[in-house]
Image 1: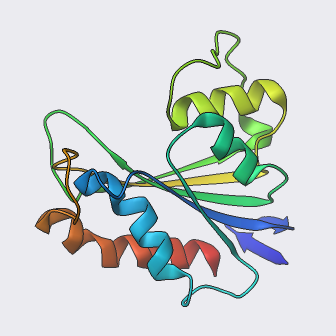
Image 2: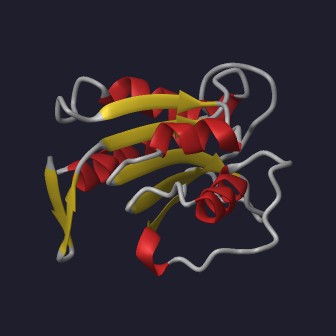
Length: 159
């Protein structure tokens, strides 16, 4: 598969990774989005769900030309439903020598993957700001309302 974005030509495997826990309210936005996109995305796109463990995230994107990660984030002060998009190109990253393999999260996965040489050629992170990550199922109204825009953003990156 060949994809082009802003003059960058990517050839190879494409994976979308939904990070989160569906039993912690808005933290389930990533896995829920992945479930909803499976039928709407190009047939050659792989979909994975991760609980946020860095080793699992790295394994999911290893060897990919393009990896898109969808996750919920907590920011203070909160604006639940706000969307973020970050693009990281492997060739433009500078490894952080102080990376630890202990700790959970996307930041640790990126740092560890840099050190191990296992970053995808291009990583796009889509994040939605969470309102409630307490126990329970179902997204809060603000995050649920943002999921259509989030899905559209991911599909644009896959086009």
